[in-house]
Image (cartoon, rainbow, N blue to C red; front, side, top):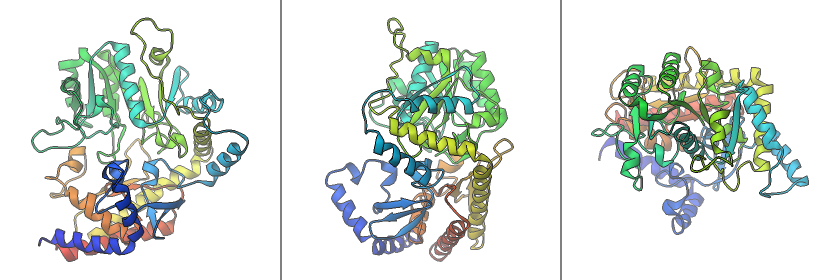
Length: 465
């Protein structure tokens, strides 16, 4: 048996010893839920633990185990799980308010005003919906409606949710690269109309626009790559994207679902000084609730207003729970706190993120194991609370999603499966080898996390050599 198989067996045994109640809950779930749950990334092998509560940096499972959590609500909980500020306010508001009514309420106006103000956008308008997938989908529809064009350009390795328009170029395949089909049910015609370019490669971007620029409705890009490796865009790249889209009559769309309000009390676009035509926000802006938004130039956003004639209107209807008063109130509390205390919150997040990345690298280096940690900022992004550990098959920096997703370049299984289990049995929960530090994490949490990575490194050396 190979060393990695023996290590996997060892970790599974240890995990099973700790999580009997979660194992039973998962067996029950498998009988009625596809795969045992409703979100694939939460369903790791051999089975996920089931959460019974969460507070600050910690999450507890049914067996009473506590984990220092860096998933933090899919990176939404920048102040930690269940921040008292939001919890107390929502409890008080619900006591004198109501649950879902389906009517307009005032807090969405205040939240929209706050977002526009933080983006310094006098000519911006907002429409809320409930998920990042919907926000990016509607942004693409608005771009196609505005330009009358049929092609969408995205980055290889970029994840923008499960909108059919963007389910291409996410996973790396040795034969197809980033050009493969990501999902059954996405029609071939849609796949052919989705183009893929390389991240942080301005020359490749220019080549695509030279060939197809007159048909490209929009270029959608994350200014700080998420699932594709926690890699910041260079300022030159985003400025070139802005210039190319403008010259070719296309729209520039920033996906700031992860990056919005993560590095500053605004979008990353304000730090880069590059203003897109449309932006998608989510996660943090909901204060722990299902909130996303498309923000953009009022002329483009007016494409979804009622009263537009014929087929010219984009049916951006939002959904049953769009702008739910409770969600809007929570988002308002969250963004208000981030803006009011930015001088304390963001430097602390950056400092703890840097300490964690350095500590992880040191823990593996001490055991003679090559590791690279992505997630650091750059000359524009002053610091970062994001981190992701990679195990390269050959030395070199993490510059692109291919460096993270190509198993020929980095050991993907070691990061995604083995490291996750090794950390779980030592009381730390991560996704994709890392995650996001919240403001609730303290020095003790960081120290314990580095120790857990050190234990993982010792196991790797023992079983893998």
